[in-house]
Amino acid sequence: NEAGRPEKAAEYLKARIFNPYEGGEGILIRAHILAYIQLGRRAEGEGKWEEAIACYQKALALYQGDYLSESAMEDWVLPWANYYKRVYSSCVNALVKLLMDDGEYASAVQVCEQAIERDPYEEILHEMLINCLIHMGQLTQAMTHYNYICNLLSKELGVQPSERLQKLYKSIHQSAQDVQHDLQAIKLSMQEE
Image (cartoon, rainbow, N blue to C red; front, side, top):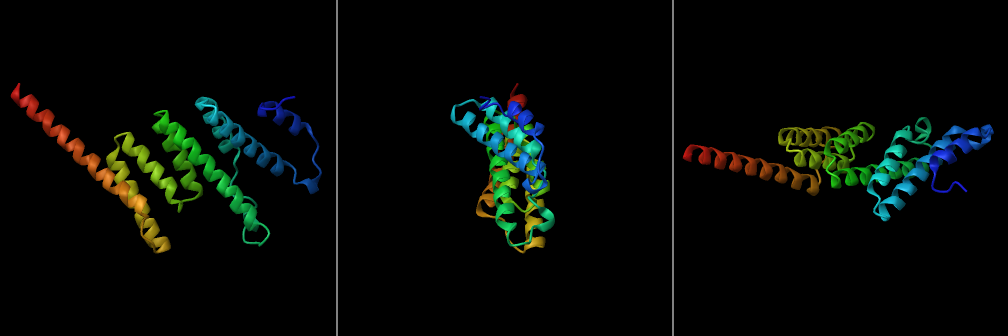
């Protein structure tokens, strides 16, 4: 039994000859994505953070975009496309959370940026990216990105940013004020010496 070993399972499945009516490689890839996410959740539940991160990264590496994107507006495709989009988003969210908890902000930024390329209107991705930038002390980049997403939402969708995103704006300003206060304290301390 190779349960819990997706690499071995992938070898066995890839060796199989697919009937065109089964969906071939697409089914295989989606099955592996779901398997890696399930293994990631299990590892996360067991407190095995590094293993969970590795599983989520493998799932995202396999993800090839929206399900049947060329037929996305057909009624029968829409529920499946939405399902796989939610699966992708939950994987991104879980991975970014684990990376941030581990202090791997640069890696989390990378994951957010890749996800934003796929879904530029998903505010939670922008929130996570801005949070990472704040934790990294990159307040100018955080403010630049905040302005970018606000402009995008306004011009493309005619909406204002969510309350959560607006709270991040306040957080950026507070962090900038804290840095300014710290710099003034250092200057005063140096002048006293």
